[in-house]
Image (cartoon, rainbow, N blue to C red; front, side, top):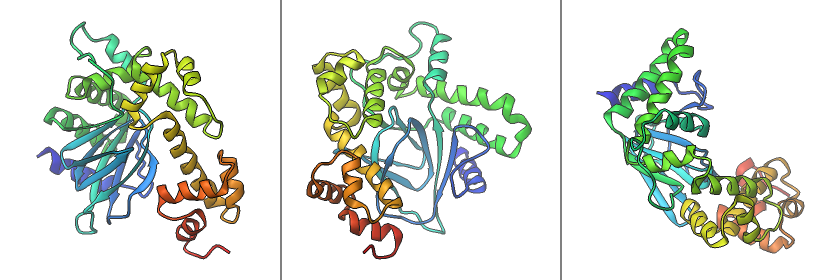
Length: 294
């Protein structure tokens, strides 16, 4: 059975840093259920072979189980964790980075009408059942980890097949938009990158809409559809995640960190930080470091 072999391959090749000898391929093994953790999703295909994973994006919650996959079409701020994982039955997952140029190249080779077209605003995350054809391509790609000399020749072919299975599958319209430079999703992805690069700077939604070449109303509607939040709320999520990274290195500098990520009010920074991470900055740093922060 394909899932059985996939589990075996994932368990054998899992590393602590999730990397593999295949470019853009990640393998995850999680032996316990930790509390949900904020992170960036990446633009990825994620397949669960054992266990389940739950992700929250804004007010939306996505859960996918063994034999299902999730597609993240934009690098989004999510909060998630594997659920039900134990040392005896760890959660096992496969990840593949989705590269817009590779998708665009495949679309250029596709006969007109073969790849499904989008009929509306795309969401940023979606879950579907994995077909046998998709699982078979993933298994063949992971088998190459046992045959390194074949990687340079065969890995590009298997990755291309995986993309094709996605394009012709239930989430085909979303995958297609990733590869099209003029799609609504591509415009929103550019906005997401701009906000991430300028997270500490205040902005007007109208200006970002103009930057990506959309009307303000179309931009706001599509941004909400993709990210499940407004542009301003999205910026807040990025600010707070960046603050947490900075505090890990500068645990005694809470006020300065808050200001550096764009907060003029220390009380507002502390209040919004606690809302996202479950504790105010100083307590969260204590929890992260395992020792009290003076």
